[in-house]
Amino acid sequence: MSQGILWPDELVGQLAAGGRRVIRYDHRDTGLSGTVDFATEPYAWDDIKNDVYRVLAAHGLDSAHLVGHSAGGLLGQLIAVEAPERVRSLTLIASSPLGGGEGQVLLRALTGQPQPEGSLPEPEAEFVEFFRALMAAPPARDHRALIDSMIAEQRVLHGTGLPFDEDAARRLQERVYGRARDLSAAANHRLAAGAGPDFEPVGALHRVQAPTLVIEGSHEPVKPGHGAIIAEQIPGARLLTVKGMGHTLPQETHQELADAILTHTAE
Image (cartoon, rainbow, N blue to C red; front, side, top):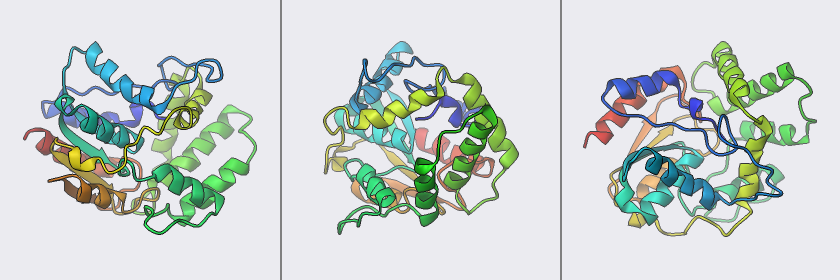
């Protein structure tokens, strides 16, 4: 549900300065990409995954180093399983293991249902409480209220390990607001999750052949411990825990992230 600019300019700049050609893009129904009326033009998560192939083709690329954050990491895992020749290396940040049922864990947490034995670790209490309140609240009525709500969400995702820069968050969310053709269309991604067959194969991560780096924040509020589970299931995967990082990519983490990605993609 994110625009390409959620990959911070500073981090992307450090990767480019390290000799990497960086492609970031707005997912369908976000930012400057096209938007649809989901009721008349439905799609599934498999279509969102196939958009990655379309972006590569548009740039004349047969393969690439894939770096995915959160749900983007799920897409990266799926591509690495189904088309290993397209993936030079895989970097997964703040993501959950493919086929692990993360969506159901989140749904049960938000609705107060018990988690079955063996489920992934559920989100932190602060995250659950915030989104329960958000779902029950009426929609924001004006620009300022909407931006304030977006900042509040970013604060929770940021976690408690590093200071939260509200001014920087406001600048970012104003950019997100200003670039969106239709800000509400991003919610179509949630509808897509239930619009087709489950796109996540279970027990497939052992088939990943690409060199894999898994990055997880020490203060991850949404998917705590999920990175370690991914690293256990992908042969040869390495796990990096970034001190203080939550579910966002704040300025304090850029140097460590850039160094790790540059080293990983140089191999």
